[in-house]
Image 1 (cartoon, rainbow, N blue to C red):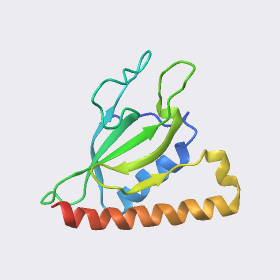
Image 2 (spheres, rainbow, N blue to C red; image 1 turned 180 degrees about the vertical axis):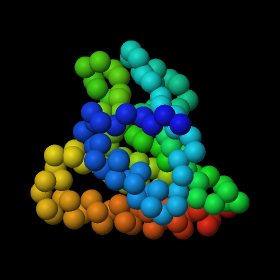
Image 3 (cartoon, one colour; image 1 turned 90 degrees about the vertical axis):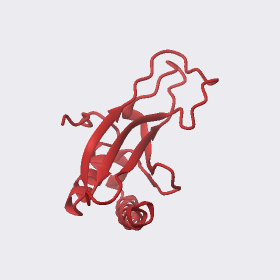
Length: 135
């Protein structure tokens, strides 16, 4: 499976760390979907998450249902496009669990890095609980 290139994103270190922590806990990304936007967004579309930019379908135990993680980005109001480079959060589809991203350069501040690590740990713990509930 080809991985979505995160090397040039403002959040590449955090998204890569999320992937690494998921894999350490036994999760496998079984599918990746990237969503492309070109031109002015069509707001009349009945779309629950119009700024969803890509998703991972993850699974740890093949007996249990997989879980979608959706990555959300903001619109560039100059081009009317959204892109993985502007990813601001990751959400568990169908749940309110969310992991917010800073720009990686913000992690140079020790307090921000500590908060990010704490939020990542809580997100992963919540994900483990969600796995039990949805299966």
